[in-house]
Image (cartoon, rainbow, N blue to C red; front, side, top):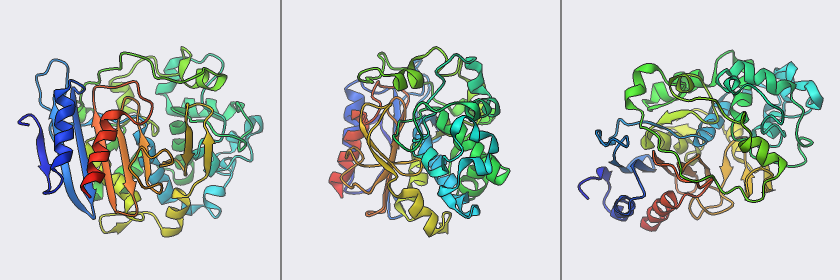
Length: 372
């Protein structure tokens, strides 16, 4: 127990016990878990080390990339500015980004794109992998791309492209980048330690990622899964400082578990962060309603999406089907339960091969709900 640091409110000791057992079983390198109930931090714990060298403890200042758990944060930013458009999420993307109309995409709405219905999961033909490090160039290439299916007729998870598409839409609407809005309107005023686009002065706080030892289980490989995950050009050729510095609103948000739980608390509290209403009520309802549910063409699951965030159809984010949530590559997880005004987040640096529902995170969520 001595290696686990942080705060646990009375009655929530079983969460610490589960967290400790995961380390004792050798499943973690370093990790953090936080839960916030009715505005009170009830759990904020850390354990383990920030690197394989083991020379630094994971503490409350440690940050880590949360990969696709970033999407739920980015969706909040988009919801905060979508009201600038008369038709909101039903606005055609091409209305704010005319180049996007190429290759028959003129009718694709912002809501369809954010809920993974646009058919732009990746590039079937070769591209320079360095293009993933150039958000403007990658977005321009996506604007020209022909969809892999007729938009609006099916959905398939857009693991990386979603961020470049979402980021370009925000920039076209506001003239600011998504990461800038997150910093200036959300995290800065509220003192939340989460960033999309990490300055170099924070590099020393970033935990070293230990990659999974096996590939994710994608099920039967179809064209869409191959394009999204398995080509030589489906991801950047390198990561590190250059990748951290750029804004990739689908994947490179950096923060601690507390910060992620604070932001997903906006889902748990009707668009509020603390006492501030960041998302108008009508926009919040449009953000969080179901837009699509069914077999996912890219992920080997039935998925349910709102406007950029997942809805809890599989029950892996606690018992409430109304919970808004997301998972990230390797195991990170965050949720906001609007009925209990509860949010929680798990972050770590030893990645697993689970695409969703990492057992480490699920045990913590189950333990948390078991204490309520």
